[in-house]
Image (tube, rainbow, N blue to C red; front, side, top):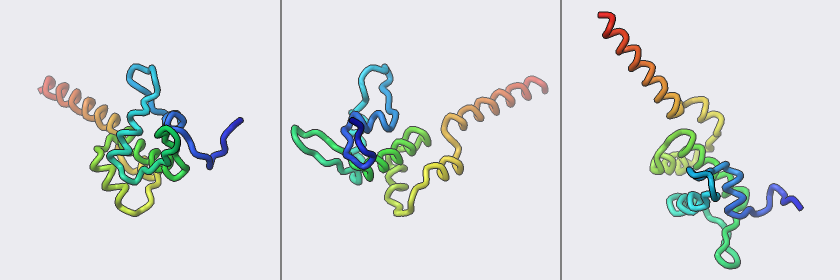
Length: 123
């Protein structure tokens, strides 16, 4: 039986939705979600039997934004908090198109550094 898109999701299901992976690739990194809950007060899962967390669509969308800002954009937690507290809607595609991803910036800096080395040898 499949759950509807609007039904509550467990923390493990949210980890899969976000595509979070542990460095060792073993178990699901649910600790990441719990850590984000402590840092971002906007995340408010429903806690039912046995302290199990259940996330609604609104919380999952917020977690997607946090994941995007921290993992894809390489922002700090404080930077992500500032953006999320700035009551303007965050369009993930728009933000992605208007900013340089951390990996791209690193690659460009390495290329520039290599070019500078080549130019110094030419002199």
